[in-house]
Image 1 (tube, rainbow, N blue to C red):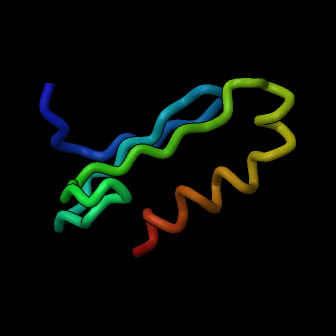
Image 2 (image 1 turned 90 degrees about the vertical axis):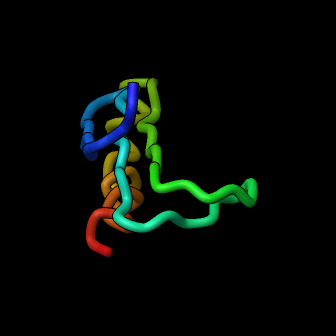
Length: 63
């Protein structure tokens, strides 16, 4: 399945996928235009760290 649109997910264990307009070089040195941001799976950990996860997504959403 081809990634053509961004998906913003919320909740424990959810994965946000962002399709960028221009490719960037990833940590592994390869170019990509897809960013995955995963939330923690443990519900108690999610509750305590929800602000951190929102901030991580915001770094990419408001560029």
